[in-house]
Image (tube, rainbow over all chains, first blue to last red; front, side):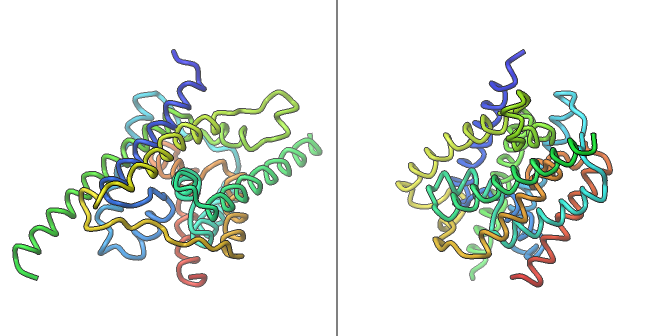
Length: 139
Length: 153
């Protein structure tokens, strides 16, 4: 079995290959939040978006079986719902997520995406620091 | 449009869909193999305090690093390509401005990401394996997207 970090690097390279394929094939960036949100609001012109989502959701299910992985959640349902709302609102308002701003935007060397990526990373780190502090205080 | 043109547009649309389906599958293997469908790894990366406590998980940095390595080459070399295989032209983002929406959106997204350990890609890739928990997250995420599209467009 490969070291987990080697697997992570390999997984990242595959995500890069997917981005490359979308770029040379469709001429578009692979921003998952943008693809999902636009598929819902402009379904008539979104055949390729639904196809990508089908691959992502279906592939995720199939490969979880292959690697014998099970779903995990790290917080309670009210928090999951709140977090989901924040992720949905934030990615549409900010125009991208980890894939659109992170992988593709940085790959295009866009300053706008660099600012977004550093901001959501910092916000995520601050949030986890608060969660750890609260856990520590109540432990 | 002539019948021949319409047929060729349809062919291209299905060709584009086939490419997108393949890309989505590869993306999901990458996320799964990279451990990104496990929110503990994501939160473990965002847990900077863990650096000092010896529990920091750098997995996400390896995934991002690997993806970015390929992405940088892809966007640098694509400039010589006249048109995409299955589309008339490239439709890449053109905005360069850094406004309040960009930063506010990123703060909201980052906060949700930190709480649940899910961003949109991994959440969708775990939709069918994560049970009701991931379903709650994804439904709320989609609701958030629609709210933003409707009222904050």
